[in-house]
Image (cartoon, rainbow, N blue to C red; front, side):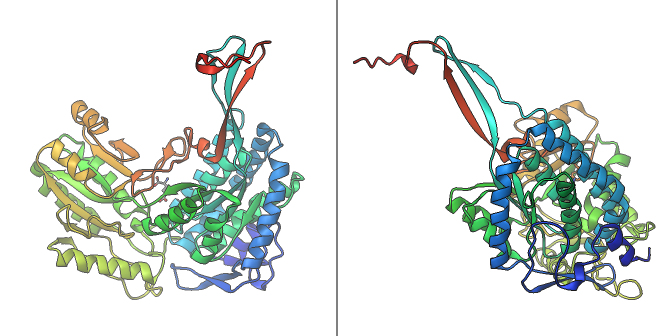
Length: 512
Ligand code: UN1
């Protein structure tokens, strides 16, 4: 579990990182303040990069605009060929990048590898998609006319991503956006700058090797101020943002104010309904990974368990027993299930949430605490905890990005579904049941109101092939698979007249 950061930097071509001037390839021009990356694993400084200044931003965007003029003319399947090469490079660097994700973000090495695998999977998806950017054809109401629609790229796509999936969410967006013919400008979380540099370096190298200009792939480093350059800039046709609801509202307002396009993938408050007709073995395991995996820092993490009253005590006890077996510590050590939270401010939010749940009358099942002593020097390790609550508690209505699980009791399925929907967010949901009527009701129009609704699997861990995103305050956007690509393109309807007449639609007569 000891980390050799020099070796990882070498494997990912990040040797120049700390020198102040970035000599790596492509459109990043760093002249601003230093951004220091500390690992939540051991509190050590991993490296530092400079933030993008306003002046550098202008240079990046000028290059991106120029690059778009080239990239949009490259046939889509040839764009897919570049993505195929990126996928192959990721296969080669999977271990090094997975390790850096784990060290910089704090998720387990297994989950770090899983995240890189998600990138590889979306590359494969994008390669296939590059031959399938289908539009429809329609029958015209006029004789000897033909109608069809086609999809064109938008231009410059801005991507704002969060610390918790520092590389996969970038890949969902960029691999699809590039395939569609856009150029991408990425503003990753200021909490994980090094993993983003590694991705930038890897992708930019491939574009360069293939003879494409700089600017198809650009990176901005910095905080919300740098993000606001993107949201306020009318040259950025689409801003795709993943993060908190507060951030999403700010982005939505700024981009909406200039009538730009947004794709928002914000917080969840995901529940799992556990019926008395569930396979309890699966239910407990699903709830456990959903609640404590990634230390509860997924937007899809399970926050609420809505449990049928006649099995409530049994589920509660089995969960409490399972929680005792969890090992918390260095996430690079494969014997540990749970690593640290991202930073001190996340720890404070965890502590405040526990205070609030107690103040509102929540009942402790498994207590929370900040861990101290050998191995926990960074101060970011916390114990996953469980509270019995009522769904309407203010703190339960709110997404806390930490491993705090709430238990809620129900009697009738309709009531369970109402409780599950009675939060402002609408990302992911699950029901554990072997009863066909219960499951179909949960998936029906009077069932879950979320963008993701699962049966007999947990709320997290979506595959890339489906459209990912949710309703209500989750923001309504869809990323990744299915036809999510359409958000990165503009639709053009074309009507062609091949007759020698000029009939008007709707039969309107206009003769002179
Ligand atoms: C996120 O937390 O922002 O479904 C993304 C999942 C992962 C992605 C989560 N594939 O849990």
